[in-house]
Image (cartoon, rainbow, N blue to C red; front, top):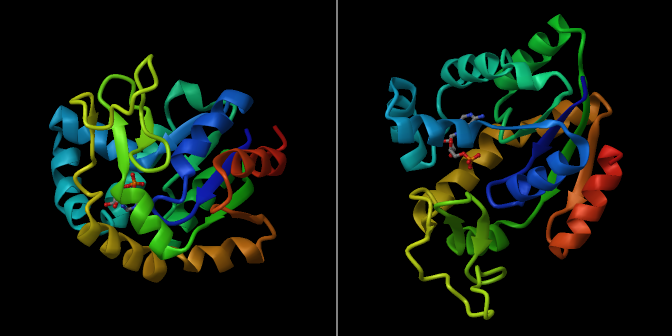
Length: 216
Ligand code: AMP
């Protein structure tokens, strides 16, 4: 079982790069943000509980996130290993992950830190668009969705902006990242598994570096 963590602030490219990594490695993509959004769409108690935190750009409490994650790791598609995207986000979550992997005789092979400056993140996130049918993520400014003739179709009903992708919530998400998540950088560096990537390069260059680090 090979486990890799994609660490970094919101908008750093973790989700986009995770999709490429999954295609190349056969590992399973586990995004706790996607799991919460799916729970919310289905209207489950978990989704409703997470919503108030997500709307404010706060972290969902550790016990809720950890329970959901452990349950996800029980699914049969996990055998080859996981690309963790957006988890862990606190030291408590990191410790819980270490414990559960240890119980399975597994460990974390690599942690990739996607480094991007705050102002770049705010701009990126404010342009982020998701396709309702494919879930594919675009960017109004940097990578707009296009029709067959090449016209920019960012304003089509097919694409929506995540409710927590507005500037005020994004600024709070960045504060939360710096306060609660960035201590994980030292945590994994001390374990010798941290690899820092320049997330501000062209997307293809980030992908190349990412694939090199994960050995794909
Ligand atoms: P993301 O899609 O990773 O940006 O996550 C969206 C929102 O879901 C976050 O702003 C949090 O409210 C919540 N969330 C996702 N993952 C976690 C986590 N590991 N710990 C706490 N909250 C999380």
